[in-house]
Length: 263
Image (tube, rainbow, N blue to C red; front, side):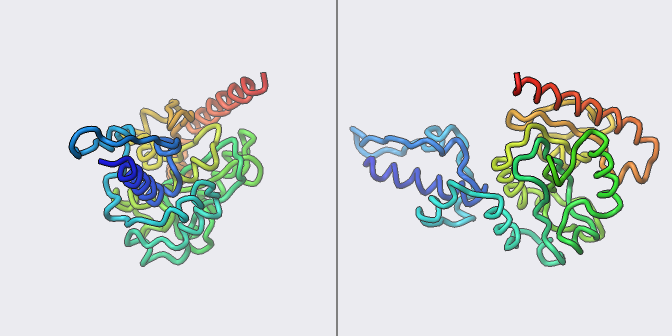
């Protein structure tokens, strides 16, 4: 295979991967140099050349132009929001009233992740604004965090599931690329997952919240803690004490990280 052909295939895969995830991932970030095959044309293992991380569904997403790709290299939150607002990837788009991209500051200390919008969020287009949202704001304020000052709040899915049911795995998968792009842009110091679904999606494994709440994990090198969803606290007052202990532990870890960065 000629080097030009290899470069063309690599750029097509890079473009498709960016279209799926909403940004250029690190595996495609560096420029590649290709050479002609010395022997007869053979099948090139581009999966190996790209670290085994080539998206396997680029054929479903379609290819975009290289000029469009160059614009994605500097993608912003507004770019991601525009994509979210137009999204029709799953059936939730047909039943929503509003899309709920997220809310907060662009350089947050903490990213707070929930599972999906509820009725109040669907009506306003803002995350966590109902009774659970009021409680969340109080929880964050108790550890010196605020969506208007040092946090960003988002959900795994950006449209409300009917009757506030849990988002289906297919719905989560269709929407997760948006959250990945938001994390890539925001680069939070820590992630706080409100409830089981958000934690399981980010960690990509089952997670019993009653056993694992308050423990620390990592998402792409970012410390992550799951705790109880505010809605669970409203249903069961007995969960408020362990949730408060979780939050105190979260703040201690954040202070350690901030202290290390200032040292």
